[in-house]
Each structure stands twice: as structure tokens, then as C-alpha cells.
Length: 426
Image (cartoon, rainbow, N blue to C red):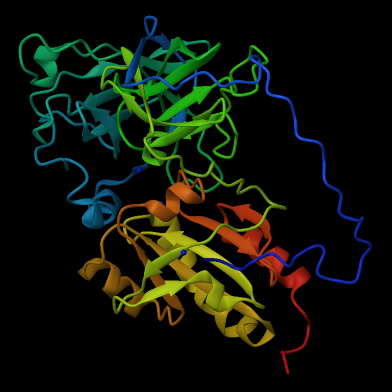
């Protein structure tokens, strides 16, 4: 299942003690040379074209459940997807329901029915109206040992305007259930595409790649990769902490010591880099071992809070949302951890995804989340800490250094049990 950013704990100064300090000297002034002069920045936006899209052979598991569980799961997602309103008339049982098929910016649902004897069928709400009775079934056919559907929806099937570009190929596979699945199989989807290009800036050319899904490249969670180190290779791994990877939500990139604002055409045909009128500091490194960057957000009452308030404690930044099912499952464990480890120096700081609403308030109340909750209305904190999926946990030690980043609470709890003092703080 996929997915779409506070001054913090300051790192203790390394030279605050009584170490040796070399005597001050006055260096001779450097002679200016022509080669040392910096080329003037571009005066306005520069647009760079990309090559034709290439499909990436990457698959992601889709949520899949019984109809009853599906209806329960989508309650907090009602504004984020199109639910199934009408089922196919000849639906076979057992039938399983899912979502996260995104077309034309709309999250659409699907149904898989059948069995090994009769074969499996896929119904996708291609036109986004919630009526799957008017969708023709696609039959899974064995491909490399896996039941597969290759879907190539045209604009007419999607209910799109005439002239709309065709959606890219979407590949669905039936695989064995994962350990946490309660279904007889799992459904995996591949719809990621890549478009390559090169950006000529001053005296250097930067290779880049745009990563899109369902034929779209310009959403805030989507990614641009630059060959920052000039080694001739783009880091196309899915590591959100890669120094070559930028989400559009971050808005800015530093290349050649200069800052640019990012812009990507919806279809990925062009990348636009606009020089900043005023320089911004480069984005901080948020990998374990580096200082946690400053963070400032309002809490549930609207009061501005800073992470620096928790200096001297072990802090867990808990990035969550009420519609995130793993967040729901982890909430009781976080409540227990704060109760048990709070006396030993733990402070959980919740970072809610999006505007404060009734669903968020109810979630905090229902799960007795008594710790500080901060509201990340414009996802600035997510951008700063390079969070690309929920839940996300960032563990920070008492001097402000990031110790761990995890997506599973059990991994965070293991580190806390090992690192926190065994006795309550005096």
C-alpha cells in the first residue's frame, strides 16, 4: 500500500570543552583569477525536455480484504478514493475488494473474484464512478508462473475527455499471501514509469530522471533524481534519504552551489528549474548519525511548539494519520510505551498529516494519546524529514542526534528498550 513537511535539539558543540585551539593566523589574501569567477546564474526559468517514458518493473502490494473489511477500512478515506457503489451482477464468491489504482488523479477501487479451478477475474473502476457493473472483467493469465493482467485503459474506458493521453500499462499479479495477510492471495500492481533528461546549468550538465505513476509526474509526493555527484549514475533506488532524490513537495534543489525551484509538467515531458532570487540553505541530512533539524509546528490548541523544548529526552517523532491503518494498529503500542518508558526519559511527539479535523481529534481521544500532537498542515515536517510513507518514526537521542528511522514501531521499541536507562529518571 502506497502513498502523499520545528528549532530542535541542538547537537552539543564538539569543541565546548577545554581542547587545544591552534593559534590564529592571518592568511595571505588569495589573488583573484578568471577561473575562480563564478558564472552568472540563469536569469529566468529554464525548461528541459525528457525522453519517452519507460516502464519500471517495480511492484507494490495493494490493500485487499473482504467486502465487509473493505467498507470498514475506507470510512476514514471517503474523501480520498472512489468507493464501490455497484457490484458486478455476476460476481463470484469469494470476492475480494481493494483500492489504490490511481487514474487521472483519482484513487479507484477494484474487485478480484474466482478461484484456482474457475480462474480469477479483475474488475477495475476505470471510469471512476463507483459502478463496477459496467466494467468488463479482465481474466488473469499465467505469465512467468504468476496469474497476471496487463491493463491498457484507453481514455474512453476511463471516462476522460477526448484527446486525453492514454494511461500507461498497469500490470496486476496474484501472488502468495504475505505473513500478515488474511486473504488466500495478495494483489500486486506495477504502474511506475521513468523519463530521463539532462539539465545544462552554468558549465555542467546534470542528468536527471522523473519518476511517475499512472502516467502522472507532477504530484507533490513524486520524485526527481539528479546525478548530484556527477558519477554518471542516477540513484534510482527507493531510499527516501538518498542525496540524489528530491520529492516535488520539497520544492527546491541545490545544484552546483545554487538553489532552484522545481517544476515538473504533469505528463513528465519537461522539468523546469527557476533560480532563486534569494539563496536558501541546502537541505539537512536526516540520516541516522546526523543532527535532527529544527522543527516548529502548532499543537492541537494552536500554540507553536518547538522540538527544542524536549532537549535532554529521548524523542520519537511519530508521523501519523487517522486514515493510515498501520498507524491505527500501532496506536495502543505507542500509548503503552509512553506510559512505561516516559519515567525513563521517553517523549513521543506526534506529527499529524494534514489539517486538524474531527477525525484527528477523535483518534487522539479514542487512543488516549496524551503526548504532544503537532499539526503538519502543509506537510512541511514530512518534507524536512523526508517522510514518504506513514507511519514513520524518527528516534532522536538526548543531545539531538538522529539514532534511527523506522516504519515499524516494534523496531523503535527494541532500540528504546536497549538504550534507555533501566531506572526512572531522578
